[in-house]
Image (tube, rainbow, N blue to C red; front, side):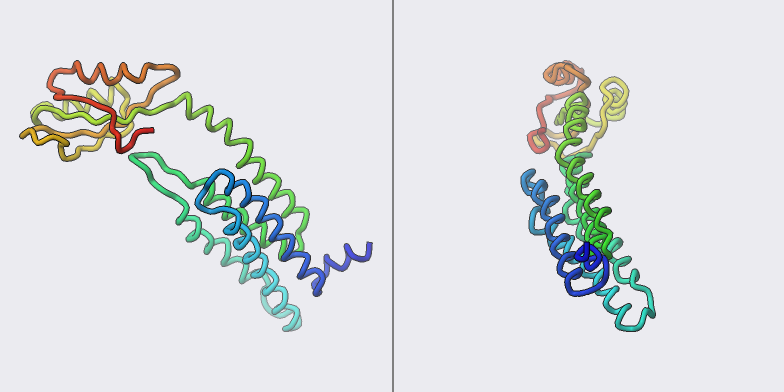
Length: 233
């Protein structure tokens, strides 16, 4: 078809088609992120995709105006590295080792690549990329969620009476309870000599959540142990 040949070339029609396609594809990815209530949502993904598309179009425009002199890929190449700064803003560290926003950050980076593909007229690549991203974020996360449920974590705060046996308690938490993270903090109470510990303990399968607390409370030298409300799951 004549219109297909026209949008494959660099002209006014192809510029309009590529920008609109970038807007559509960015919106498809952003809509899923918005539905999941992520920090980067519908409008952000549209802007990233259209902006990346524009860098490719600017490179092509300058290249054609200068008589095919220069590198039309140079401007777009900076987008791939520069989009990382935007992605960092979506990553949050909660509690000890709990990090969120990595998928959204990766999605923004991929959305930028899709926008560049639109700008250069790589339509099929942009469409397939959008399809894969949508499937990954909307469907495949369920398999990851199942794995997380099997490996639950318990956030515990406990106070140890004095520092004499502190290293022994830490070794016990590491070896017997497989603690992932142990942080020494100021004690919540005003009892002199007590040492506060914030601990992350993994729970395998259907392991009893309360059993961990009972075990800690029965340990000699432990003043008390409780759910760490500041990092509860």
